[in-house]
Length: 279
Image 1 (spheres, helix red, strand yellow):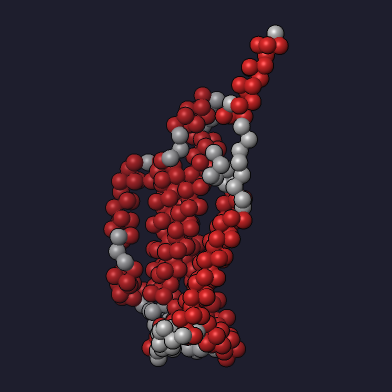
Image 2 (tube, helix red, strand yellow; image 1 turned 135 degrees about the vertical axis):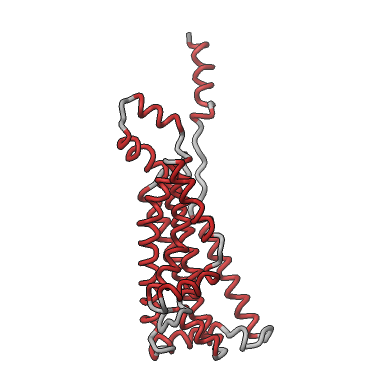
């Protein structure tokens, strides 16, 4: 008995299911990213110190830092830096709220119903294929030059990625899970709340990350519509006077927006879908 038991025990110990998983170091990617950022900053310093580019086109990091402090203290383009940041964040927040509030339910409906998908996919495909600046004049004609046109432009940029992600999330639900739940007596509402929606949530969060990037890239275009505040407005005002250092300040602020939103989305994914990437 002992002779027969030893090979069986060895087989279980060496089976693929029981082999310990090798964990990758969590700090590896962060260290690489930090080194890349330092290398980019070093290259920027070298390029400006040895005059590899004209200061008109590429100001030094010191000049940008001085301008950043000056704008924060004295303001620029009819407002302080804090006022411009709050104006842009307010527009982005409202646009994302509209994008999530409409994109998620419409995308889920399109994923569950082929008639809804056939009807709604046509107008969404038409406008999503157009660059925002193409239909920007039309929004001005319809809504004027107030906040409505800016927010609608940003909302349209956020809506389509979220809607398509929600639809793809529903379509990716394995049929075996649905069959198993139905065999246990689950009704339609229980199927949706316990199977469809949790399975689609990772795709929805991915679509939200894409929507945030699309909204930030459209921000400057949205604040071109006779805006009197906002980071995009500040950038465009500075470009008219060839104030490249102020333009760099605005670009750095938008990059900080993107980093903060990305970090928030990663935290949200860990809380809502901790199983993502582990199954």
